[in-house]
Length: 212
Figure 1 (cartoon, one colour):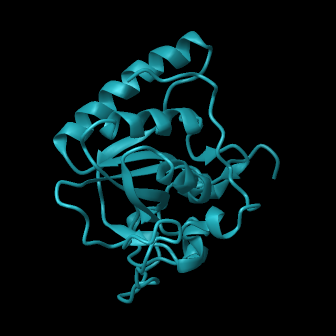
Figure 2: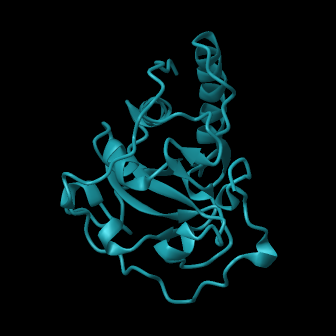
């Protein structure tokens, strides 16, 4: 009914989450755009971080086009259901967010460039949605794998919050946490907008620049 909260915008409790499965939904192969292996091996010295900014199709394209990124993949993260399917994630019964794994070179432009791309490519104030996409799977997330990434992400959130507030925007709702297990999404989701150039993107920022 009108005025009632969308149940998909409420995080599921662990005890109510779908059980998942032991078998992965994808045997990772090569990146459709650059031919590099999705699951490695990665170049020596590479770093990995994970970003959620709404629908992962447009988010992945934004990140594979970012300087210093070696390979990307899309998947599910932050919930309770191992090897979840897209349909299960869309049901709101897994707790997962749609995320993008970015394998990158820490040297310049490095992680700061990814943070700028992340903040500027979506609206991080919307909670369990991104634009017309409503549900916990569309929440804004940064999942770090090193203390340096955590510190940089938190600093950038503070700086971007100041810029957003000055422009009249609400508080940032982005989840910043240690990276939980990453479950590769199905093959057709990987590099979706390269395979379907006219497909739905969903990426749209606030127009506020981020200075990291």
